[in-house]
Amino acid sequence: MIKKKLTLHLSVLLLSILIFNVHISVSLAQEQDSASGELKIQSINIEKLVLQDQNGKQKTINDPEQVITLPVGEYSIKQVHLKGGYSCGYRTTMNLSDSISIDSNKQIKLKAGDPLKQIIHINRQGKYLVLSYELLGVDNQKYMNSNREKQPEFSIYKADKLIASGNFEFG
Image (cartoon, rainbow, N blue to C red):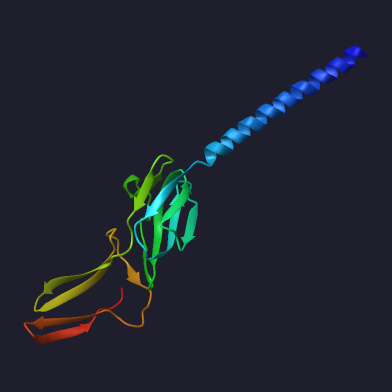
């Protein structure tokens, strides 16, 4: 009888130790998984930012703060939407140079979006000048205005005299 009680107590003690060790291991794994770092956004006009982690999971951040806390890891930028209807979908493949590496020891800076710069390319084709228009962000990515009601316009002057004007086509 005493031997059975002792065996039972030892079994309970061993089971308790095993459960305690498993709990500690799970707690340590959760602490490691929850490590985070900071992403500092250097634009005040971003209204939506879409990131994708190395596992392909997308994270949409609406009205991001200037500093975002993210789990440690590699991210690629998928979309940037600016106030005023301008947006950019880019970095479709996750190359090492296109990724943001979030580290718990440092703050990573993200330059995207504004200020936007208007670029007009002019090419001669015979007796015609062909104009093309791009809107580039500080990240050198192409941005588009989702408002298609009014096309971008241009005017060409020679000194003070207007010699041509027109609209750019979308696309």
